[in-house]
Image: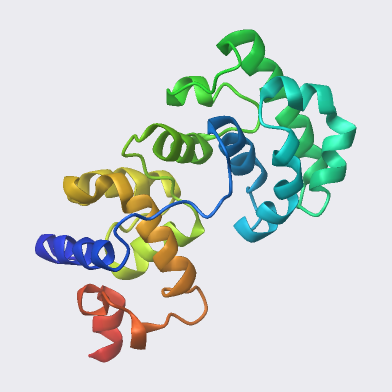
Length: 211
């Protein structure tokens, strides 16, 4: 994708959705962290269903420890890998209390020291909770970046680093969410909805298909 096309690409997405937000429901940085950990290999819709009742009463690391791993499992048993995820949530809650004064840390290094937290999860928390211009490359962003020619790469880290360089700085803060939403609802995996795509004219895939 040409440099000038990237500007138009994000300007169009920004116009359609000026203030994009995560679709994971949360009440504070801690519940956001838990929700993102639970969302690995699961849908946001499925996580929100499982955490709706949980977050009504559990919104701090101490409350999570008081709830206990067994009861946490009962809340999230509809989510894939729920036993492993429950164990990780308890472990990360313990570490937040002992190492971070019960507060979710802001740095990637500290976040990745928590159980169940990798680079992608850390990037989401840094972006949503603390406003850092990070990009968490999930399957949607990976697909959109490669398909459109925006930031082609062989793995998520390659795509992330390319996006950090190629996304115009004006749009870097919200790029993560625009790309996820675009991949989730328009640039779908099996059948992209090119006929209603607002940025198809800048897309390498569409240009090849049309040509």
